[in-house]
Figure: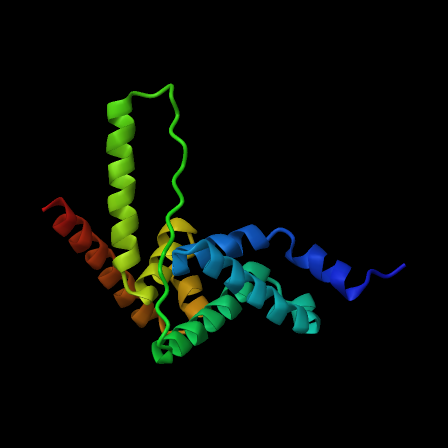
Length: 171
């Protein structure tokens, strides 16, 4: 018996949804926006099921589709009078660790999260794909659909910008 299109789609995408969510969260910095971005991406991918069947590397292809949607969102938000406000989730502390160490770690995480949120979107994208997810520069260039040289320069500027933001925060 042949699977339904929905079952086939689930089978093709099941191992990739968590990664797509990680990318979306790192790009948007917001749980709700990340969920919306993944949902819109999956909806678009489902409509591309015949093409999806033929793709060899599903995750980079899906990431490219999601990146296009993300860029469209950014363009629409630039024209929108609505401003988005980030909500921070606070994790419960582990009582078994030294409180001073936990406080230092929390402060460092807060500094990094604050600096990350102040990076340009294109910098968050290249940093998250290359440095965190481990895509090669060639793969990142393919996902964000820019030349390799542009990808390299964006990565360099993103790293420098993050360093500068963290240096300023230390004051």
